[in-house]
Length: 89
Image 1 (cartoon, rainbow, N blue to C red):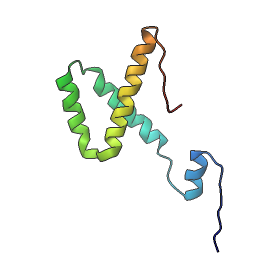
Image 2 (image 1 turned 180 degrees about the vertical axis):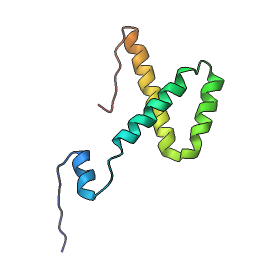
Image 3 (image 1 turned 90 degrees about the vertical axis):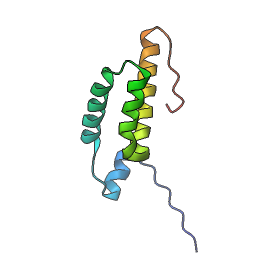
């Protein structure tokens, strides 16, 4: 016998239901620190060095770096009068 259950909930509701901790504040602090660290990056070499330092964090760190770079690119396009198209939204 197979039983299929479909649950419609937000990610926050799912996290609470599964008993996972809320890491939102820790994530905000981490993102702020990364943004501050990236402000001084003016060359490709420095950017590559920064990415290398994040590599030990594995896929999560690299995904965060990718999201940061996509956000910076979108913000740059927005400040130049262009529109950003984000496929995830």
